[in-house]
Length: 316
Image (cartoon, rainbow, N blue to C red):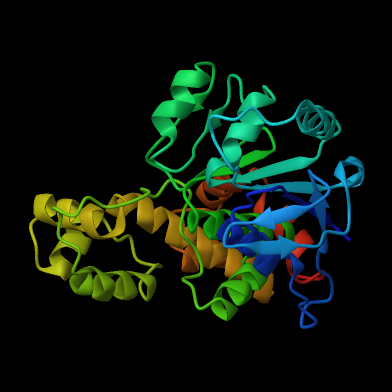
């Protein structure tokens, strides 16, 4: 069982803590295996935002045998976390534990020196302060989440849900991650590179793009060049690219590459189709192109992904 440990501290950010418990602590008997979950306390008594008192079942010692440690925010970005916590996180990271911060929780990782030379993000309100105080970090302010060297940092609050689903997808595959998302009444996936927010001056109607995106999903086996997408939307290529990015936060071809990958993942998990057929159905030019794109995006091969998440016996 994958052991998830979540930090609790005085002034605990209740929404971020709720994300951790909803995603990783909630029993899910419909799945053959799931996470074990424990909350560890930084202080003897924990009072959370809103006057909620938290009764925890572990101390910092519990971090020693964690597979994933979640830092659900931090009470004050200007406050240096206690050294025992920083020491525990350094030791955990050195032992291969995965670390995951939500919103201001990144300041704990930064204070521990674990983000030096790495890419990281946080809520857009805090990115300037993070970069100023920790100049060795490669801060990116325009993304939802970033994973670098087994450390995942996410932007403000709700972006923690997207990042958490990303981890579930890594551990259990896209089908289970999508099931969890549906139970939360959420879209199945928002890519980490998607913008944190869309400036209000840009159009956000979304109806034209929603129809176009559904049409594209139904025609993934076709080449679907930019010109074809723009024609389907009834726009010039220039206008289409501007409108698509304004409504989705992504460039149209980047979105299409992501959809091809999602479709291929689902087929690998749920069908026995040969890899060449999956490559064709998902819109890749060749099996080799499919393998290269899959490896680049997920750091594994389609065959290895199927062996881990899909049917154990399939056509060669």
